[in-house]
Length: 417
Image 1 (cartoon, rainbow, N blue to C red):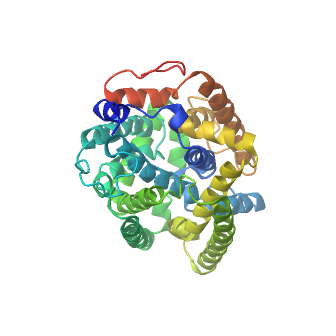
Image 2: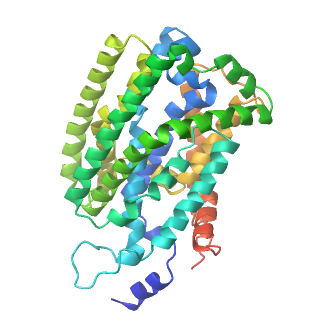
Image 3: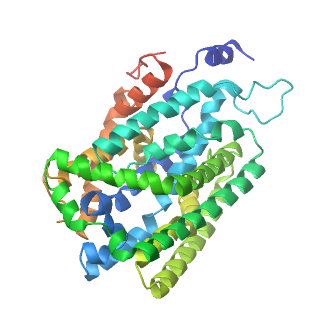
């Protein structure tokens, strides 16, 4: 092992910008922009709108079209990509301690526990950021869930064979997704649809009022979510992340296959995913007599897994071939600043919708919600392209890494560790 590798293991530091993987950054940027579409309903409308949009928003053709687009192409798919990439990040992060290929079978491999303390501190710092985001700004936060999932078994299974990881991941994910769906159905039938919808009138008052009003409503919602969904949603998330480790270990996410492989994979997977998504959604909306949107929410991600992987394959193909290069340079920039852009989306949307901002909560429906998404995307892209010219990390990424390594990280691009 050369001196640079030994020094990197002795004094681990964030990966240099020049060594980032373009395809992974581009997928992350795509998912970051795409996840805003389903999130906007939670930003701008009471929580019950997720389960029954036609009751809370408006029962009109535009609502039906907007919900259809959101539920078919975005709901669950972007979250699946994010969780997959978080899992891949475990394997990437471990390279600081294991070397680039810990599964090639050297005679003396580093101990599995090497780097565990730093990894768990990284997850703990993300948990702290997530809790501030969730309780301070928006109950739809996903960072807390990712941090908790990262603190489970992921670090310790990262060297398992990819085939074992994939099969185990699929089993865990499917089983706990079905359990979560059954849990939702039990809630619908035991508490009734009105209970599932909550109290929209009270939410209107809270989120169009002062910051303390919104805070009280948000705390109540979060406590319910953490109590009822940690036992089912968290294991499913771990399953997805284990699959992400496997996809990284095989080289698939890094673009190690020929371009024609990704082209064929994208065509087949997108077609299959669209068929399974449309078929399952039509079946549920036809036969579920109570809150079909709530039932579909439980299955949208599972049925759309081929669609998610098809998105990823298409992006990798574009990066490898240089197709629409300016577009994917922008996505890579957004992906490099994913945490900062995620928090920026929350700041923009809560300022637009909540009472301590412009107070538009409950007043913007479809198709105007898509226009809001487009405007936020422009801000994310312009901010990212300008920022990466001068700085190594986004502002939130810099804070996260500095807390993780217990020392301020170089901020300007020309700075060296």
